[in-house]
Figure 1 (cartoon, rainbow, N blue to C red):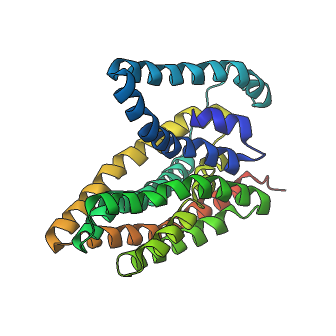
Figure 2 (cartoon, one colour):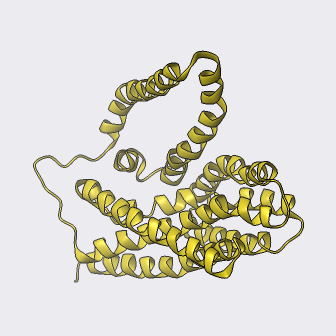
Length: 278
């Protein structure tokens, strides 16, 4: 699906499109958490399963109707098989690493933020509902960040500023007594880099290599995600505080601009090699 979005929007509002695409995951979870318990309590588990299946069917129908226009807009290469150069693979893995570390920064907030507040004397219900504000505000900040990246054509600057701002606010959250304002600030900032990050692979993948390229992207992402989560949990256990995992998330976020610099060097090298010599 990511490859399909890249085919449709490369060369135009790709950061906005990617932001809306990845935003469907947290928004879908939020809607499900509100809607499905009510359906289950009123009509039973069987109808919950039917409701989920119904939403999936609606999505498939909409894709069948609208994606035909996208196929016309996409550049198709018939009868050719794409091959990835080593430099392209390195660039895709670098982009995937940024996406992985960025998401781990979010995971540390959702996984260990409630426990951190419970350690301060909060009830579990109050801690969970307060941290969930980040998710609700991210549903707004993610597409906003993609829109700003396309509008300003400064996607890399938004990635750098967003990740650094997110990291600083994460550190503040683990130490500040004013939890609610910091949580609101985290939610307003944390989603800004998402669309620009997800648009990075399209800069190095041609239409004929996007399928395998995005496969590599997600393979690296899913390989790194459980490792980072395990390290965060180990730090929390060994240091005796959930705030250690939250701070670990901030460190991972600060690594994103450095990897982006590496990604940019690869892309610059590819562009120079693509210029014919005279």
